[in-house]
Length: 349
Ligand code: NAD
Ligand code: ZN
Ligand code: ZN
Image 1: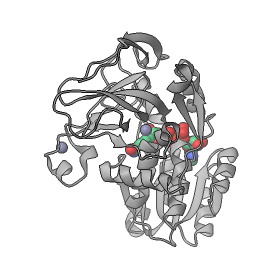
Image 2: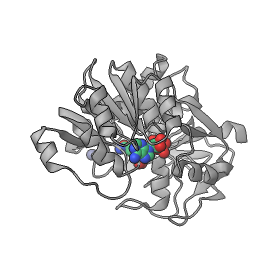
Image 3: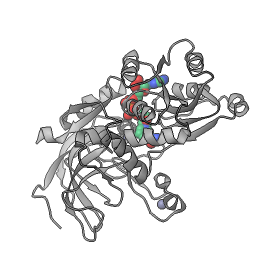
């Protein structure tokens, strides 16, 4: 095993829910048997990091913890018995940090719902730090030719929207609604186009909608327009075959169900805390499927990255140093980030 000479590192920690992150110098973790140490080059900031830091969800992480689940870096040390990666490899440390590998969900490649799954930047420390400890069996393998800063948003926002679109079962030529054109949605528009779908983009912000148009959306609808459901139904001739809701807003969920075509599928990936009312009669009488989708498995990851290598999908990024993390959180909360902020560790060192 090799060790980095650095013994302490800069990290941004959640020490209390709902409070700003605290920048601290903490010890560089040492990889035990079966673990690897990754020197972070870049880490995207996902809206999930806001939910994590706010303690929004029923199962809260243990304090203190380091968020960030779009961390990309170079393997700098490996623990005993590690065979899956080598020192010098470029990897990503994603939301699915590890799983048991043996339960019915792991065996059927639905490993993100494994009862023993650990989550990067949540139940395990994540990428808002100069080094990340990782499980070599679950890291993303970053293809040559993909810069770390460009790869970062793909290992959560990219895989989640790519998988979510597949889960709608929409076919080439079908219509899909992408609701929420932020970090996830701006990639969702590009994946959907690359997968041969007609895209209707929905957001509450006209700037985000103009952006969706530039990325190839056929139609854009402002969710706050008087009759947004009617506008989508008109444009798609009866509703979209697939609807993917990435918006972190409960209002978007009921609206998304209303935009779904008869026999269509509405896939939920946005995770605002709470519940939304479901129009039962419409769902039943129109035979609509409502389905949750949670990131994706390791094959989805490789596929999602391959679209970027082929030049079909490109994250639009704004680089910031780790020291700016709290202002980035504040802007993301109020919808003032254009697409994705990526924390650039190369800039700081
Ligand atoms: P983001 O803040 O970058 O983007 C959210 C977008 O939604 C913004 O463009 C905003 O203007 C738009 N929006 C807000 N209210 C809306 C409404 N009522 N209708 C339509 N659009 C609306 O967030 P993000 O990083 O893209 O994450 C989005 C959500 O997805 C978060 O809740 C996050 O936790 C969740 N998420 C889920 C998974 C999963 O596996 N299911 C993975 C990653 C993120
Ligand atoms: Zn995420
Ligand atoms: Zn399992």
